[in-house]
Amino acid sequence: MNAGAVILLLSLAANAALGWAYLGQRDDLAKATEQRDTARGDALACSDATEALRELAAKRAAAAAPARAAAATVARTHQQRADYTLSLQPSKPADLCASMQAMGDDWLQGRARP
Image 1 (cartoon, rainbow, N blue to C red):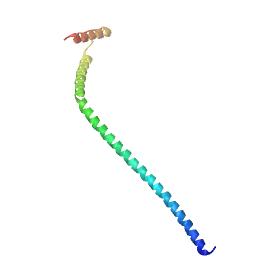
Image 2: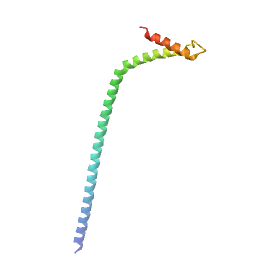
Image 3: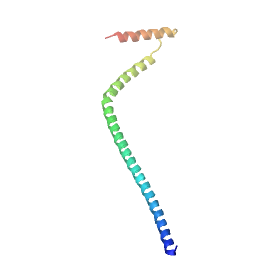
Image 4: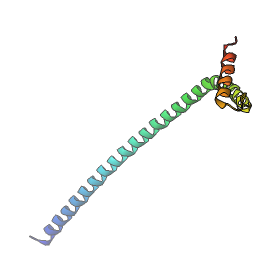
């Protein structure tokens, strides 16, 4: 075999190796691009879902505002009644059980009024 044929064979082998490496890198790039596009699509879907949840939360908060206000009013009334009850002196200081029973009777009478 002459030197020209050897050089030609080495050149052919080198070109085949470079071609093989190029094809591998191209496939890796295509796979990475596909993964990137999938990740972008997933992120966009997540962002859209988060926005929808935020809007739903705002609507529910607005719908619940009157119920919260009513509950706060009832809670204030109960707190005032509890403060009043706790400020009372025992009606029978010698017998705390009888005092509590009298307080319970007063409370029940107050509930029975129209």
